[in-house]
Amino acid sequence: VNWKVQMKNLLPILDWASNYGKDTKYYKGTRHTDGDQKGEYVGWKDCLRRDLLAGVVIGIMLVPQGMAYGMLAGLPPVYGLYTSMWTLVAYMVTGTCRFLGPGVNAPISLLVADAVQGALGLTTGCGDIPADVTMTDDCQDFIDASLLLCLMVGVMYIILAVFRLGIVTALMPKPALSGFTTGASMIIISSNMKFFLGLDIPRGSFVETWISIFWNIGEIKGATVMIGIISLCMLRGIQILNRHPKVKPHLFIP
Image 1 (cartoon, rainbow, N blue to C red):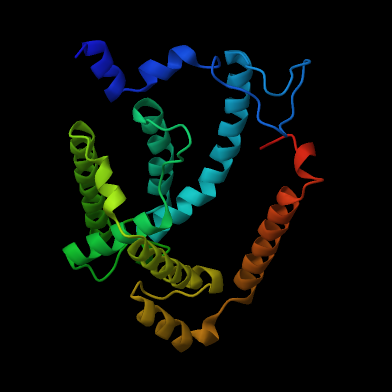
Image 2: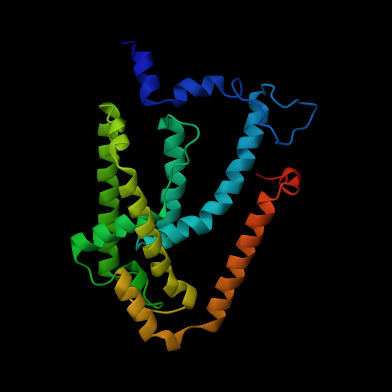
């Protein structure tokens, strides 16, 4: 096999970068300027402008989202930002599907937290550090083990890519995936309730978390709850407006 073909298979950016903007059309309903017609091919400059705008919007969203996922994984919030941004950069070079949005998510964060905490047998993590303490031995061990786990997963992904073993994912049954997603959603809600209510309780299982919440129900901070409710209402309102057919076409951002 030609070595150029092999390189393009390993680094797909070498294949699509030369055709950037040459195989892109406007989608129906998108705004356009300068007399461009919908359905026509556009140049790389217009594609770059749109991609930069989309990148800025996604970057703004990734800041709170990445911090939340870092905390959900039991790590300092800054590690969620590292993972969110560098994952996208890596997939830009090695990714094979333009429609995928890789990055951290809630189930992965939960799996990292449970795997590392179970392997090390730690009683406290980075989320249990007092406000007047910057770092503890348990937190540093947790960070080191998480970085090692990421390295191991990366090596496994490379091996799967080399031997073309992506087909293995098609063998996963849908009921198992649905059950995992439902269970993960319940654990995610439970693990974030202490932040929503302003409670200082240790990290634990689903049942332990709710028991700790009910035992400390008298220490709920009203200001924190109000901020959480207002934030949820604002997010829901923006979501409704963004989906409205009369509002969506007039938005200047994706």
